[in-house]
Image (cartoon, rainbow, N blue to C red; front, side):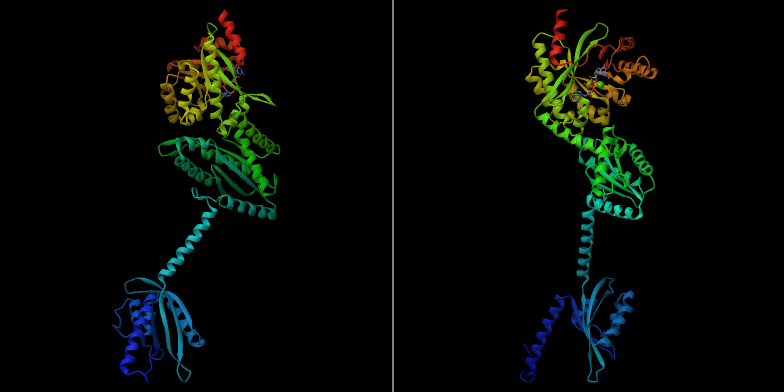
Length: 584
Ligand code: C2E
Ligand code: CA
Ligand code: CA
């Protein structure tokens, strides 16, 4: 709608002008901007309606000047704006200025000013025209975007739970350490740290407790290292540390010892006091390897060795270790097959009343009947089975086979006494365990009063409160509970009172050195006295000599198990023994 004074009458022209101004106002509003012009000689300005609104003023309530613009700029932007103005005058090009301005209300706006100089007929700068745009929202959005992209970057490289570097960042740092130490010809250590029995905590207490354990562990680990070392979480309960610039291997061992010590204090999480230990493997650059993958593999292998050696310890990598890790993988695979095919046989070791030599029961002990390797003793696969959580299935197979055999003996008129089954605490944490047990008892019509379950003191004491609860359920069914390997697991007297036990089994390590070791004899006597005080039955395992038996009987331990009477024997041999007993 062009305005043409020649053609239009004044009224029409004014109308058109009015419409155009309205449109212009709407456009300014839409774009959050106000337009203006300044007379460079008088500094007097003309503002659009939206310019006033932008500055927070009543439209057209005063005659503006350029000073009002400078007055509203925040102080740190004033100098820059003045310089920009000089530049603009000289360059004859349009220019842009970005800054902040403060309204009378105190509100701060981010603004973008676009301006251009107009020249008079003499070529002198006479006017400055332009727009001022409020871009506060846009700046805010951009800032948010920037922050979230930083955040994303952080997230891509860090573990959400512990805030530690993750596997990706760890690998990056490892690569850098290799480069740096190649240059400096120095040494660094790579530590692999794995919390012992962490899976049990997660399984039995829930992930929220597991998460707290990981967080606390990461804090303690962090405290064990220096600023320029890297601590990362690879996932699960696996942590790694890169100890840069170590002078000797001993410095790495020192840190490992420090970590083990730092873990000793119980982890207090909600109302629980958890005892957490860690196993650590160490590989050294460049002594053990100079490339990333080998260093990782070796530190991992050393960590496994530390676990095998009873956990709560560290191991330096040695050349033969990777072979044993390889063996472990093979063993794991064949163990899984063994479970599927139930390649297990149960041996029975008789237990006697020492006074009269009467058979009172047997302990069922598993053997793995391997097609090529022959009979594998439990110590060679039970620890691995515990680690892999395969123990639950193995124990169920043993339970089924042993109960079936016992039911047969009873049906045939023999009296093998009580059947004692070894049970991993993992089994008790399975929700369907009791049902499984009842099912098997029912299937073979086996009297539950003839059954007792052995749990090791070490496993019970890993989480005594939970153990008390789970064992109580079994005890309520009328099944006896025996505390196995007693004396090795630091039970406190208060727990001993609360646990629903029927019998203590004195660990063979105390029996072994009777009568040569005074300390072991004292401990054995103390255990017996303690058992009596709690009204528990007593049995000693690993009894090999008459002397040991006499000592135990004299001090009040009535039941005896060990090579003195019999090794663990296969079912057929046990049947023969039962036949002999029946005849006499
Ligand atoms: P444990 O429960 O302490 O079993 C006693 C171990 O001592 C058995 O070893 C037995 O053969 C051995 N032993 C018995 N009498 C004597 C003796 O007079 N002298 C000596 N030197 N040793 C004796 P085994 O059968 O090799 O079992 C080792 C461990 O494997 C068991 O220790 C138990 O912790 C575990 N285990 C065996 N069977 C099972 C099972 O079915 N389930 C679970 N969870 N663990 C089992
Ligand atoms: Ca046992
Ligand atoms: Ca034992």
